[in-house]
Image (cartoon, rainbow, N blue to C red; front, side):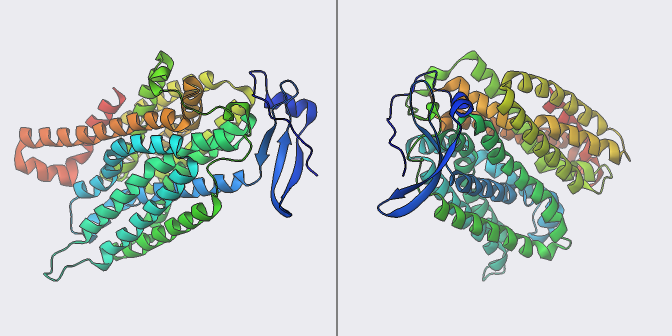
Length: 458
């Protein structure tokens, strides 16, 4: 029978790590109304006596958020590795295919503020379940792009369904992308927060990685676009089912850590300090540049003679996944958040400069792949660490608000990257005329993108 525990307000010295070290973690089966309800690990801190419990089903909630983040990222990046075939199949230009990625960055800015409010006010369950259904509906509408390819008048209308579905998936992105910080704070104890946040965050990178591998593998011919859309829709449906059935409540009955006792009700403006603003600007620049690189990687490298573009994209994300895993475990044990962020940021800047310089050379496949791997290893590795550091800087402001604004700043930078690409293209047209536009499409695009990347580094 579960021993009676007395609930007291947590004090600053109510430390989970110390409690585990002195008293250990005991697993119980809670019996309520004659039925077994759940398995819990009960941790009773030694000083202020505040009971803390970690529930086994937290891993199910984490799995649902991971799968949802993964499928949403796959829907976002599904067309970037096969941009040429997508443009040919839907009889549109490459610019239109690029807009399928841009729509995510545009829509996520206004929706992001509402998503932050929903996560902190209505709870994690409401945001995740709602986002999963929007994500699923958007993926199904994308499939309608090939079902209703022609209207009765013989006009191609598939691209309109594609943009509609992509827009709905973009609405779902902030709801699931801002959730890892809240999930880690509400469901996991302090000594597991960074790891849980890392796992949930890198699932989005895993989705982008899978998109860079699956899309080129399926779409060997342009008519196989239909198969690709169907597979991604099936994964989105599975994620929706898991989220709807697996997330039963917005928070566990008993908090897992002392910080989870207090509700995040402080106004966000109180968290406006110098450290957070610097983090927001740096992280926003990283998110924007990363989004632009993934969206244009095929168009950049193909025009320079590199054929295994999907391999470079996969290496970039794979090493980012490895780096995030290592950094997450390291900061969980050492709590050296600032040191990890500073070192990785400096190495990311060097890798970015190297990437811009490598674009000047042909037939350097190994060098290009190595630079892409280094960029992912250091650049993507610090994403969950920065998010967790932002939550610490802004406490007791809600996790959804603090991390949401970080991503919104990244969406702004991503939009700026796309606008910069368009402005440089327009400058090219105005300076050299229509014939230059044809050359730009055929063999001059790499020169254009090299200028863009120099702007990115600046």
